[in-house]
Amino acid sequence: MKPKKVLQIVRALDFAAWAHSSQRRKGGAREPYVNHLTEVARLVAQATGGNDEKLIIAALLHDVLEDQSLHVTDEMLLENFGERVAKIVREVTDDKSLPKAERKRLQVLHAPHLSRRARILKIADKAANLNSILQTPPKDWSATRKREYFAWAAEVVAGCRGVNAWIEAVFDERLGLGQF
Image (cartoon, rainbow, N blue to C red; front, side, top):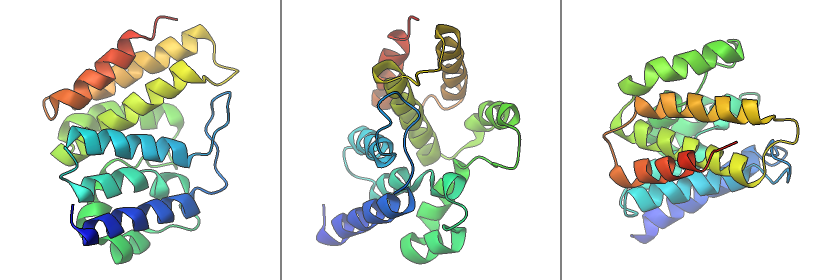
């Protein structure tokens, strides 16, 4: 990878760490949220053989508009990372003004209409979420709630399939481990 591309990825990691610095994962370990972002970016990098730096950057930033809208704007993404990255991030961003059930329903409906890059990112994000639930589930999540999340994630990913066999296999492997 060219030095300029590496620099852009590191800048995105730095930006994501700053944006999510006070955020923690829901799991029992309450690990820093940036751990999730780096896992998603790693999965995307592996899925693309490290050949799509824009998608790796979008993976690091995929939750900034959704979770950090008070201090991160679309304009900031455009200015710092360009239109292609901002477009991918916008595609996978939920509208937090909607009730959670509606956001989840819309993810299922919109998944088949995402760009190829956004579908790879969406699958990587769901695979990382399944891994978190398997490794350090939220303490207040019952077996039923975990099963419901796994079933919903499978619905979302069903609409994303056909873009990258490797990331789909990672998701399927983790999905198969979800016997609660």
